[in-house]
Length: 289
Image 1 (tube, rainbow, N blue to C red):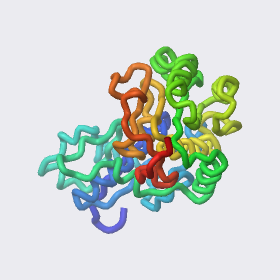
Image 2 (cartoon, helix red, strand yellow):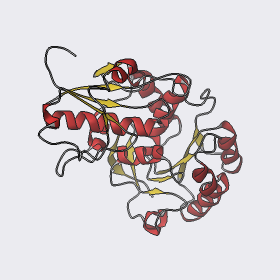
Image 3 (cartoon, rainbow, N blue to C red):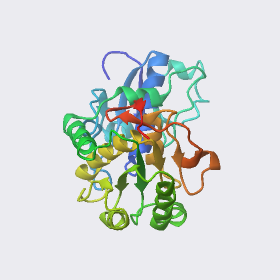
């Protein structure tokens, strides 16, 4: 900490996934601006999560060591996402540390962390990968974005409610209505991607991403995130924050359908079939029928 500035620190934990981390960090940055505080964040890396934030997105905010954050907890304890603790006394504290996997409950009328997500750009290597995949797959036409979680580390509710068979059957149903629809598949295992490619040979996606949550796998995941967000419709796993992150990146024009979501999210219920600009997925152009 420099001088006597007041600071807000968004703290993520080692086991938090990409979606959990981004919504806390970006929400914390929004809140810091609202409260007139400097901003910093804690982003632990290691075997369970192998990439720093600045290796994924262009992000030049201060990163605090995890050890510093822990050392300050006797004086400045961790706070939760509700923000109910903010009062006149709290505003006198030099440091706010917010540690949570949840989105912050920002004040009514405040900018959303979704909007903040759309303002950051992936690092150059990931941007190039996104553009290459988009162009190579001729994804300027409407395409279905499919995100599959089948890795053994996935939550039991996800594996139970969103088996690969559900995706295969659902893609078949959608393509019976729109046979010319493109298909981008973001799978967390090569085996899951191979099952989709065996049934739909024209699908596009990345394989050989590396060990789960390694630096290379996370960089590939960010590319997946933007290509999912640029689709006209997302099929995603139940109980996973990653496809929700893609939908927030895309904005309200793209529906996220899971095996347990309401009927209103189904592909057949959507009116507009448009494709996004791959690095700014919220910007839409008319799709070709």
